[in-house]
Length: 56
Image (cartoon, rainbow, N blue to C red; front, side, top):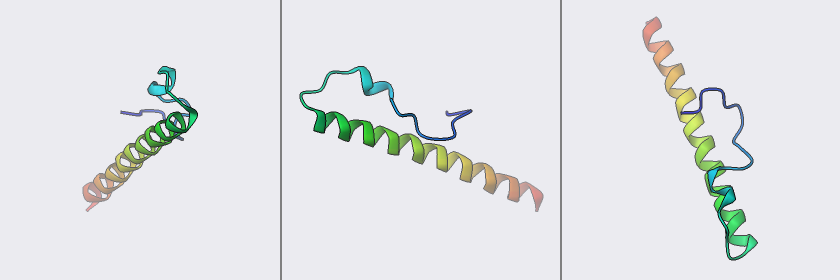
């Protein structure tokens, strides 16, 4: 899903949407950054587990 991603993107795909205030906007950006980071971390972990399993 994130082939070359090292860190979460600063501006996720929701960045261009208009929000009623900056607090909602910041929360949404934070949520998507955390979500992207978690997906990336899980992918890295599963690759590592698969590598160890294949080595056994």
